[in-house]
Image (cartoon, rainbow, N blue to C red):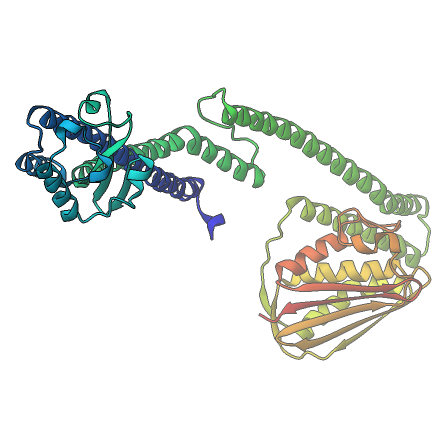
Length: 485
């Protein structure tokens, strides 16, 4: 199916899926990278927010010596931060003596008990590393508060000691919506430019490639049809297609010159063959005519029978030369125009016998005709007689010592079948496959070598077929069929 499509269609079918594959891959990777960036931004925001909370708590402890719960609620209800909780382990605070009192410890233990986190086993208190967990569009962050130099004013702990943790939920929805909008805009821009690129590529392909390919294709068809006269048109270019076109034009010119040389050579060869055939074949009857005329000139007192014989020789020689001239004329004209008339097969047989009787009697060749087709048919009588005469003449030449020619006629599937069989020497093997070619002959003493070529052409134009069977030394049988009408 694909092989019947144009190159531009194949190009689109090949490139567009690749573009969308690249688009899908780019979208997937871009989404993953943007999500990663979003998480990193959210974590950085959580770290910054936790640091601000730590500083606020330190400031409250230093100035007020206690944490303001309302302030913590206020921090946990604004912006993208939700559900802020502070957790600590009372025993790990290590307050200095001046800050130790029953009332403070009671408040601290009460906060610790109200906490829903088991701080004693939580990994943040043990490792001091923040933990992150994502649930849909919410990022849960647990960030430790590590002691700094200022914390040591109230706590007898080393620096980086985990004094507490802040747990907060950070909404990722605004960032996700921003990423989604950005992705939609990017997709729209990408598709727009992709469409522009595809259309531009197709237009450029049609202008720069398809047009030149079409010219080459048309020129190739012309050359395939044997027309080498039409040059390759269009503006020459220096790209690969231009070089291909230039090479194609050079090939056309060279083929044209080679064709002209071959045609000229064939014409000269044909003229030479025809001239040689005419000179050779006309020499025999002309010699006979010349001898008969000379005999008439010298034999004034010859008996009438002898005189009639010389006149018959002159008549037969002229008739033979006229026949050979007609064969050459028919062959040179190429197509033979038929003039079909309705005639009975019996009448056609009578005309055939009259055409060859005298010549066969002189060669001591017997003609036996068996006509089993008693009906009317449409033939070009003159042309078909010429085809028969050519076949019988060939059979006659194959029997120089005399022999027999059998002509059988019958009807088969609305076709008239003719069989001409002789008892001659048969067809030489070296020309057996070329007997219907012009100027192919087995060294006969008369004829142009065109008889069978013209015979086949006549039968073909009648819509018939011809077949030859021959065995060396046993004779030849020619069978041809012609439609009745």
